[in-house]
Image (cartoon, rainbow, N blue to C red; front, side):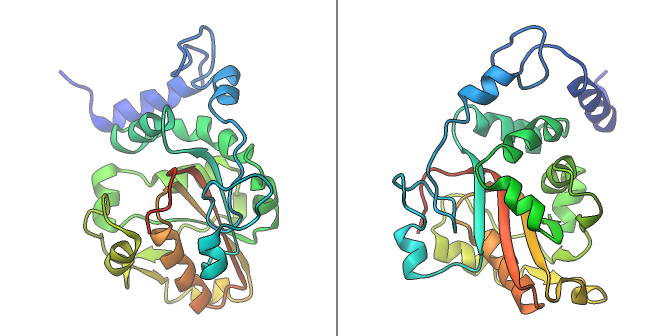
Length: 241
């Protein structure tokens, strides 16, 4: 008889704390992600400081962000969304495996520029799921990452709301994604003043075109945030405009 999802998730979280095989190279003994794999699969990549797209070394901002500055002041991505991270994210999000958060947070913290974003943020907000998606999955992977990053009392998962789910975004260009997301995010009405004049850091697992993070950032700026940055685990290799 299969284990209940809640019990399965609990066992996986416990297993993440016990030395075993590395999930990537299967070395023994190791934590879920061994130091060798973390080093091998996180090569340094020059990225745009505004959208985290790959750029040539020495370039601070990509051409797209220079032409049309995004609503994010800064954006850091730890890895490219490809092998092995695409499979890891799939396990984390879709296979009831929240234990990955503890292993992935150090990968994010080690990214160039991540420490500065975490240090200067006055509020750390995970990108929220819709209520329906949260019930379906049982947890918000962005919230688990933000907790594992050590946001502490700065972490507020109750401020930014996702009012409704959006149609499938895969395969859509950025303009279509933005249309899908229009009106999706809002600030909790009784606590919206909490972001007034504050430096806010958004945390998410994957950034594709940036439409989700940009829509959330616009809602925060409308509520008075003076700076909005983003820290994500993975960035798709190309910007789909």
